[in-house]
Image: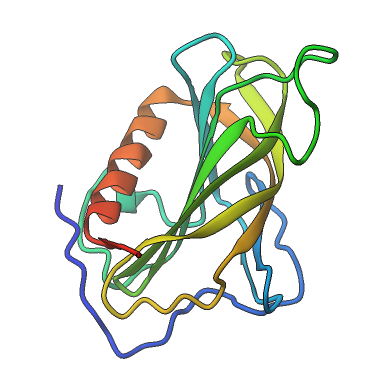
Length: 196
């Protein structure tokens, strides 16, 4: 699978500083800078999930990129968009699990692709699922997850810094598509360097 990454003199094409949250497709997602209020939003056109390593965990993949990005593994230098991966590892139970935005029940990675440039934000927060892992479709939301830029390719401009992620989604159970997106996410991340 090849993912040539090219540096262009085009500014990051994600919607930073926009006012609204996009809705449609598989839900909505928005990451807002704690310091400046700048934001990046996504209107997912793909939302899939796969079972995790136990009965309560699941991996969600939400993206506004065209499916050929992960199905054909071609040149992505002309593409701009996002992939959000959420790994929900605990299903909160009343009386036994802290149910609070300050608790953590999931990890999140938001990869931003802008004309070949890659930035990967990561963090964790509190997620709730609506339904059971293994259902044909499974919804959920993550609220005020703490995020920061972890990896970036040359020329990627971090205009968010420390951020908060909010997302709600409904994803179809599709282990095969989830695996393809996971491989693409790993390949694109490999073309970025760790942010110190």
